[in-house]
Image (cartoon, rainbow, N blue to C red; front, side, top):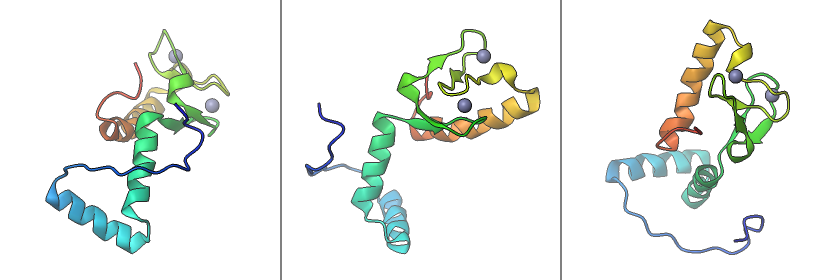
Length: 111
Ligand SMILES: [Zn+2]
Ligand SMILES: [Zn+2]
């Protein structure tokens, strides 16, 4: 599989909810982003999710991150941060933000 090169294009036929497609086309028109590019971006994220570290802000691939055996969160490969170093309040905030990814990916980000 060649994931680095994106030069070849293929046609994708999918069946989606009419209202969802209507809403997506409206936004893609407003933002001047072709729907195919928006879908491509999502599929890229879906296949290889990348997140930003809540502490140092570095982007890392979920696939490459290790899970902390203590807290069960992904450990940032750059600064080694996980939930263990967070206060309860911050941990809750991060947890809720992470739910956005999980709903997008229809499951847990990792673990
Ligand atoms: Zn970090
Ligand atoms: Zn931890």
